[in-house]
Amino acid sequence: MRIVIQRVKQASVTVEGTCIGQIGKGLLLFIGIGREDTKAIVDKYINKIIKLRIFADEQGKTNLSLLDIRGEVLAISQFTLYADCKKGNRPNFLQAAGPDQAVELYHYFLEECKKRLGKAEAGEFGADMMVESVNDGPFTIVLDDDTL
Image (tube, rainbow, N blue to C red; front, side, top):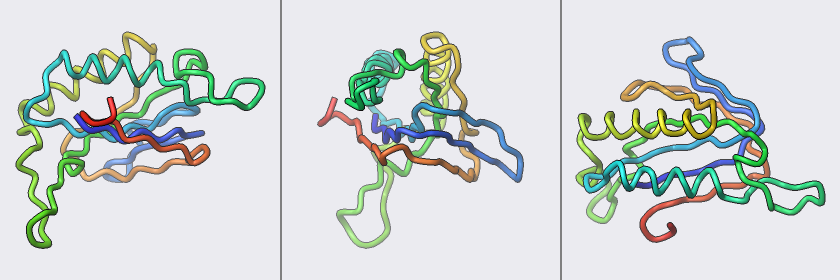
């Protein structure tokens, strides 16, 4: 998996002119699912994301987690996180999971976030989405095999 995490004050996703998901304070997650990913790997990423201490406490120190602040999540599927640009100028996406595997794990990710957080909003898998956010910080983290 590869996940880009952005701490936000608010975020939303629109498909064909209709807002299908929006959150207040929390995390905007761009989720790339790789060919080798499994539910166990998804669980590992969720556990890390919800416990990351990247929100300010009363003293302004980044000491609080998503769980601590009762923050929200907006998850956007994004296979382009697996772009390989080593050869030529046209990226290939051979390491990204195929659509069947990716949609299954993306929906699993969302359901697990809902169970653990109470609320998780989502984009539409495979759709052309317009994502808007008000970044808080900005504070952006990339999680992948090298950083988790």
